[in-house]
Amino acid sequence: MTRPRASQSPDSTIVGVATGTPDGGVAIVRVSGPEARSIVEPIVETLPPPRTLARRRLRDSEGAAEDALVVWMPGPKSFTGEDVIELHVHAGARNVGRIVAALRERGARAAGPGEFTRRAFEHGRLSLEQAEGIAALIAARTSAAIDQARRLVAGELGREVEALRRAVGDLRAEIEANLDFPDDVADGDVSRWREELMQHEATARAWLRSFAAGQRARERARVVIAGPPNAGKSALFNALLGRSRAIVSPTPGTTRDYVEAELLIDGLEVVVVDTAGLRSATDDSIEHEGIGRSREQIAGAELVLWLEPAEAAPTEAAVPEGLHVESKRDLGARRPDWLGVSAQTGEGLEELRAQIATRVRGDETAPWIGLARHRDRAFDAAAAMASAQGLLERAAPLELVAFELGVAERQLAEITGRDALGPVGEDVLGRIFSQFCIGK
Image (tube, rainbow, N blue to C red; front, side):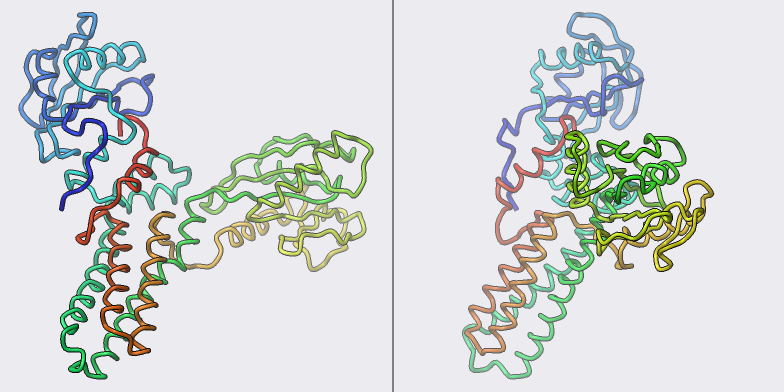
C-alpha cells in the first residue's frame, strides 16, 4: 500500500544525533537517505564494507580531524529502509555540532522529530504501534513501562491486532459475498455470524478491560499521606523512605507545603507525598495555603493514607476510600480496625508497604500493552462489532452489517497503520511522530 510521506522533502537525506545527549563519552551521528554515501564518503575518505564497524579519520566543518568509528548499512536492510551511515564520534556539543555541520554543508538536511522512525514506518520496516513503542521506551519512567514498550517494539500487540483484523475482514468478505443473494442466507449462517462477532467483540473488550492495568504499570502512582496536624505524617513519610526527607516536629503546622519523593515498593515505583495537616480553621495565611494544596494532592491521588495518631480521639474527617492508618501505635491503640504503625519502632511498616502495593496494583488483570490511542481504536472497533450484531438480530440489510464490519476493520488497522482499506491519515501520523525526539 502507499502511505503518506513525510511533509519535509521525503526524498532528501537527513542527519541527526541518535544518542540522547552530546555530553557522554560517545555520540552517534546518523545519516539516512539516497545521498548518504555521497555525502559522508568524502569526509571519511572511504567507507568500510557494509555492516562492518571500522575506524576512520573524518574532517569536520572546520577541517579538523576526528577519530571515529563508521558503519554503513545499505537499504533496504537498515533501520529506515534507506541507506544509513552512522558515525560514532567523541561526544561534546561543539565537537558533535561541527561534524553535523560538515554533513549539512554537503547537502544533508537536519532531521525533524521522529523523522528516522517515520521513514522506517513508511518503508515498511516498522508498523505504527512498533514506532510508538520506540517513543514509549524512550519516555518510560518505570520498569513495567520499559517491559511494555519493548513488547510493543517487538510487535506483540501488532500480531494480536492483525489476527483480529483478518478475522473480522474474512467475516465481512463472507457477508458481502451474499449481498446479491440475501434470500439464500440461512438462519444457521446468521447465527454463526453472530457467534463469531460475539467472540471477536469479546477479544476487543478484554483488551479494554485490561488497559487500566497496563496504564497503572506504566505510570507512577501518587500515594498521598494526609490527616490532621501532628498526626505523624512526616515521620511516617521518612520511615517509608528510610531517610529523613521531611522536617519532623511536635509543633502542629510544621509542614506548610507538600513534599514528595520516589519510592520502590514490591517492584512498584510510586511517588509518596507528605502534606500539610488538615484542620477546619487557621489564622495563619501560609498554613491556610498549605491546607489548600493538601486538598489538591488528595484529589489527585491514586491512594490516600489517612493518618490519625493513637494518642488523639478519632475524627470524622477520614477519607472514606483511603487506607486508614493509626500512627504512633507505640503510644496505644484507639482504632482497632485501622492498620497500626509506629515510625519510632517500625511496627506495621512492612504490612503498610504490602497494603500500598496491593491497592496500587489493583486486581490481578494481566496488563494490556496498548497505549491510549490503541485503546480508543479498539473501543471504536468493539462498538462497530456490537452494532453489526444488533443489525443481524433485527434482520437488517446485509449491506449495513458489512459496513459496520468495515468500520471495525479500519479501526483495528489504524492501530498498526496497515490499513488495506485506505491509508492512515496524515493528521494521525503527524501527532504520533511529532512527540518523538530529534534523532529517533
